[in-house]
Length: 198
Length: 288
Image 1 (cartoon, chains in turn cyan, orange):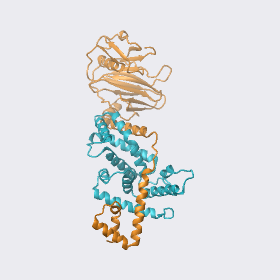
Image 2: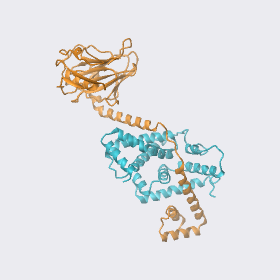
Image 3: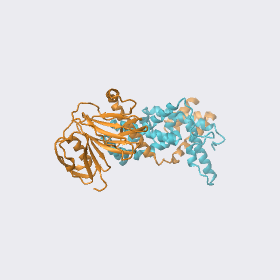
Image 4: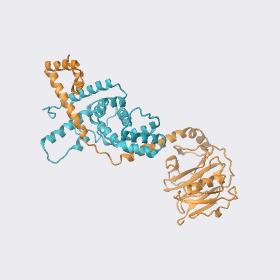
């Protein structure tokens, strides 16, 4: 067992006995990663914060029953994903335009965060532009596909870990991930003027 | 292999997971279909771009921990309210109706409200929670084994009752009329609650005796321990006006009942202990 996993195991055991400070330590160890994942799914800081807060409440309520059949991080990804999907379900039928949501020109908050106004080499600008387009295309994907793509390509989870997090067979994860990538490719291709494959 | 089937293999081919036979068939399909080949190249390029996303740093809000903790605290509080619901719906509503108390919104409690305890009833002589000159907000009586909070305010306000962990366990929303809310601690051990008026901006701690009887007249510990011991020994509520619950003290109680007690003989540095009506008042003085 790695040191990080061991530390988690110790904190989880203490939290399961009702030690709130151990739980708080667990939150501190994982909140950053959980937030970044939630932010990549939503491109909205407030929503990401809500999702992460809800997720840790669920973790708090469920931790007495956590049996460590998977790593804590995998379990957390599962909970954050569920919170995100629940939020989207709740939002269905509502027409919400967030100030942080991608603007009509496709500019998302993520893109704004990485923009640099200083003059730089053309290839850097092009790279930034492409990253921005990829982010925007991901936001157009169905929630489930978005979560899978982010888990695999950004959070670097393995197929096995995604399968555990989403409670799916590995074969299903692979085939759904392939469909998500195909959808993404199509979306990216629609903006060929900006998205130059050269 | 047709184009539809070949697209299913885009990912495994890209990741080098296709077995030799399938890989060959896939490459044949690409070679035979220029559009499919272009699609695959576009796919491979988007995979490269996806990989670049992980390098984008996402700034984490400075108050993330705070927000998470606040949400957890709120969830715990909500849970405690849910546990208290059966008591609220039956006992509290009945008592409120009997005593003619109307219009009080109670959001939750940890107390079990019963009237089973026996205690020497006396003439109520409430202790005002507010300082002299300010409107009287909350007063206390301990009668028939119950702690009574008389809440009087000129304006609509809120009185919060907090458990020892600082979590709100009950809130009383009060209007212009005097309100009465009796409590009984149904646990065996005494408990310490905090009663906080949001209007007056003040709070007091109240020890409420449980079912057990204190057998030790002499003891030592913190002010918190003293309050709990006092309430259990004399079977009444003890109201503490002060902030330092952790100050170390030693004590010796005289007499078994409040009537027999000579509280002024309890010499405690920095504290004034007096009997007021049916309750005991412990006040922190400036100089210990």
